[in-house]
Image (tube, rainbow, N blue to C red):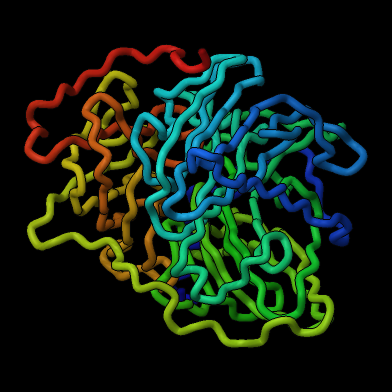
Length: 488
């Protein structure tokens, strides 16, 4: 993104989100803490050919700030969850057990799968219950994530620590020769902001326009972190798992880095940038090279512009990277990363328009019993997302889409890959080419919503079903009120 475009983008974000934090600040000191790398969970297939993942959502206690323990939630641990790695073509089975003492769900954000396995607000897991979805991984290599999606409670559940990364691998990504040694030269980077009191406890104030925006940034749950990587090329998979904060990523020395993937998978080829913007729920992967002994800081830098002269998104040092040992891999990135076709809409494709206001989509709050849109399986459509108010973004479950335009102009090149979540600036219109899957089920909905979690919880969400082509007009637009039907 060029400087002029980025300043415009920064102004829009600052006008909507910046300056909303309060409470006790915990500024980083000197990158004193080694980055926690979530454990990798990648079970072998059993005798029936199924990879079985066991996940337990539980309460815990964690030193978010060294020396002070906070009450947290986690998955298979006290805070956050393991990284789930699976291959395209795998049959996977999840056993999700709820030990947090209240109903919740677990959504596989970025996965293309049947709606009944999606983990949205209709797939509630009661306390002490276990939910057991199964599906076949049928999508390109990508970085996704998993998190709760309970109706009106998502912000609190994610903020307390129920989140983890998903990594899908496939032969095309293997052939690209990208760094792939987990935790060594392939580093997960989960960004979350917190607000902590003087005792290091989480402050939970989800009110206001945007809900909670913290003044303390954690990376993989680590405060003030550093990571050692081998000299040469390293890959960073960055996930914005914050409730509302938007990150403006750059290196402190201004170096170029190469974006290789967005939410839905690899870009056609690497895109060199000096700065990238990441709104809640979005992911990107980038590769950069470090000389032996080099130290560099990844940071998020706010912008002060004419449109935002008295507020600022804020400057945060996120992660210190230290290159150790002799250079491991100095080969250039391949010019071509993926031959997969990007989502396209054919001539005459249906256009659906979504108008975003303060907490509504098309003038409606979320209703768990109402189907808002009916889509034929395999459809390719145009969706126009028009934001009439302050900062939003937009996530569609199950799909892959490509950003065609932002206010009539092409997106920056690094946003031209497959995605499922997009930043929608204040009073802007974003045009998407959306590709839907083929899991038809007229009685099980998917969601579309703003992924600023305060907005989602307030009702800024709609529902769609995918049905057999030609049956759209015969589908009921009403659903029964869901119950807590998982966990027997």
